[in-house]
Image (tube, rainbow, N blue to C red; front, top):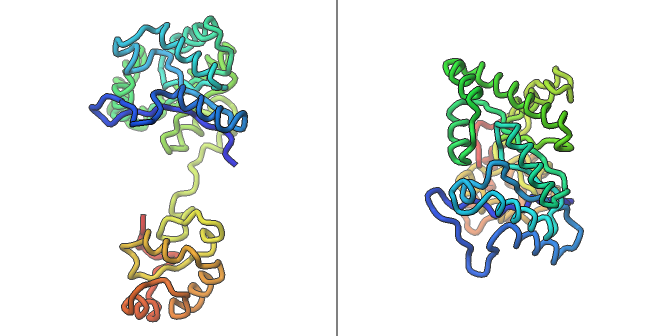
Length: 293
């Protein structure tokens, strides 16, 4: 059911220059062109934009800002339908970027990338990697709170909400893109501050323990995720091999194992030792402290 794709070139490993693999795409525009050529209008394609300039382009003195805007337009001309920007902390820079895009003939929606500050070390790492401009008032606010992690996180929500409000009020974007980094709390806090959800809805989501009832990573195979509630303990260190060898099991097979043990399970091993262990019925299941990644 996937219909939306954010087409990115991707970053090279740390300390290395990006280079295309043999026969591969040279840039994100090539990917956009390929998707359109192979799939027509089936997908809605988004592309990346850089309000301050690309860290390996304009910010690295490898091209001009106008060059970057021209390349962004070429991605749109190739089939991009919306833009999601790199994170930023200066609203004026984003508004100037939007104005430059419009002047270049880019008319698609431009969604600002909002990264809520949650910790100072994380903020410093991300801004250094992206070569982000930090307004003096943001640096001063973080310096004043550097010994209070809770105050830093609260300021991060406040700053992000203020940034979103200014952009939406200016009519520069139809919405925002929040970089959650797998943390729902700050995102909920931002939405609550903007009045988009009830403030009581900013409570944390259920923990992993509540949403993962089994100590292994659930399979994505149809019928297996809900049916598999037990696994033999001797396969603890070989979860991939076990999943592969039981890939042909029907939901009823897993149900039988959960109810009566592995003695009645369909064949899944190669040797007598595995069969004997299976017959012994040793298993770990829901509620077990063991975990398999």
